[in-house]
Image (cartoon, rainbow, N blue to C red; front, side, top):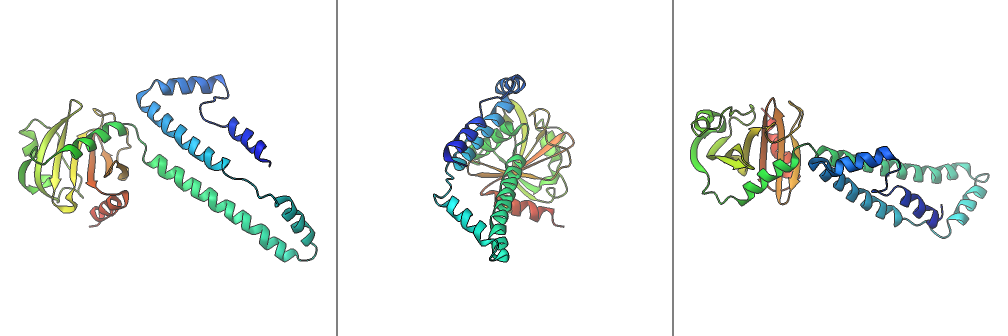
Length: 249
């Protein structure tokens, strides 16, 4: 394929150019929806990035001569030709696998209500420590402590309940209450909140979903009406290791 033909093909699939009226209506609806607008913009940026990479691909000038040479070598050495033909196929498969993994990782970090969760992370990042009240118990035994401060329904899953708590508070984030617990182990801050009030649409009982926001790593999951958010300064790999250690008996 000539470079000019490739450019025309890419132009036809660039984001922002709907191919029919139904697609146009879907785009217009997404642009007017708070959550979908963010996801659409992320997808557009990703598509533009991939398109830019594709446009950087240029076939070598002697490609036609090489193909002709391979065709001529078929009768003389069929085995060698098959060997050379298999290599591009394997390379193509590896590229497709890499793209599939990338898309899976991208989709796994997107969920309804992520923007509200990011506000919690930003609130945590701004804390100096004086906002928290010292406590001395396991994180799972703070139900009465939070109830006395107006936060009802506090509970933790089994893997979080034994963690040693050192400080707690009821925070008001976007006008809604969040229970925050600083635990000594892993230097974590645990957040407990009502999923519906923050618009978080994670599937109940699903595994921890790990992602990053600015310099923070986070893991979020939902159990019934309650969501749990773990935050720590670090990378996604750091949080993956923490979640793995919490899951062990």
